[in-house]
Image 1 (cartoon, rainbow, N blue to C red):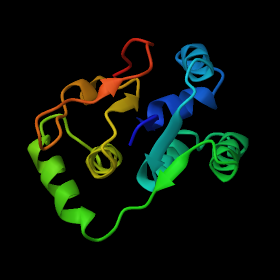
Image 2 (image 1 turned 90 degrees about the vertical axis):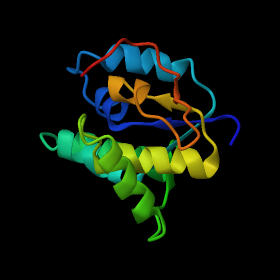
Image 3 (image 1 turned 45 degrees about the horizontal axis):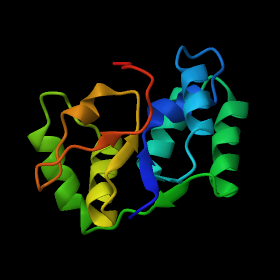
Length: 142
């Protein structure tokens, strides 16, 4: 999918939490990004959990989804085998459900870019052995 990148929970949390150390770099990065952002419900759930200290922040994320700021791709039962295999392959990191769901969607939609502040995505590879390319230049968080 051209003109699209995945977005992980880290930048979502940073965007909606002004006290997050990555807030301003993520805001600036989003201002400089004009293509579509794609994510999954596990990522949204993870971001909401990390923002659980503020219902207003959680609601703002959902408002962003509702306005079309994020395209949320659905997972289907056929994706479970892929997700389990990826989680097993990267169990030493470990790869969680949210990250595995993004890799699944990257493969399905042929998306090569990702907005993340998590260095694990520099290690993950598609089934063809290719890494995703970071589209947010903020440094590394974890």
